[in-house]
Amino acid sequence: MKSFRSFYSLVLLGLMLSFSAFSQNNPVENTKETAKISKAIPDDVNAVLANSCFQCHSNDGSGMARAKMNLSEWDSYDADKKATKAGAMCNEIIKDMMPPKRFLSSNPSAALSGEQKELICKWSESLAANK
Image 1: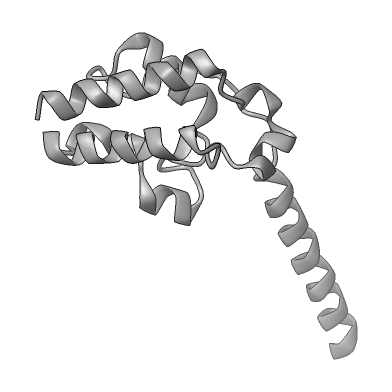
Image 2: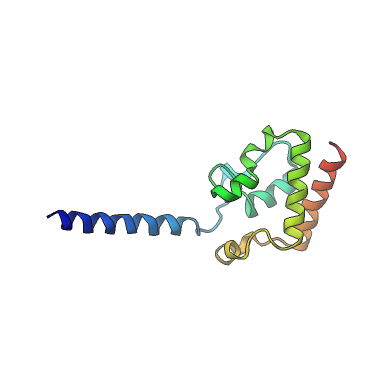
């Protein structure tokens, strides 16, 4: 009887882990919750970030991505931290390191166009100039 329970416990654990892994690959949903990250971010930049970054870089995102930059906490950052984070964001997207290819394979609509990359970088430069 004990081995029977152990078997079902392992099966249940396996199912839970597989659903957890699946949920991280779900396509980006542009909901009202992600529609406006911060009032301090211009609407056009915000729309790009909400579509391409927020799923991982938010309170609901993955641990490592959230630790590097948490857009849910953007308003709590001081001007220097905002400029530094935005500058790092620009560098990562220019090098095509963000969004990651693995993420883009299941979320192709999150790919950034050249125009969107330029928009993010110009915004980043404006933050650096104003700090």
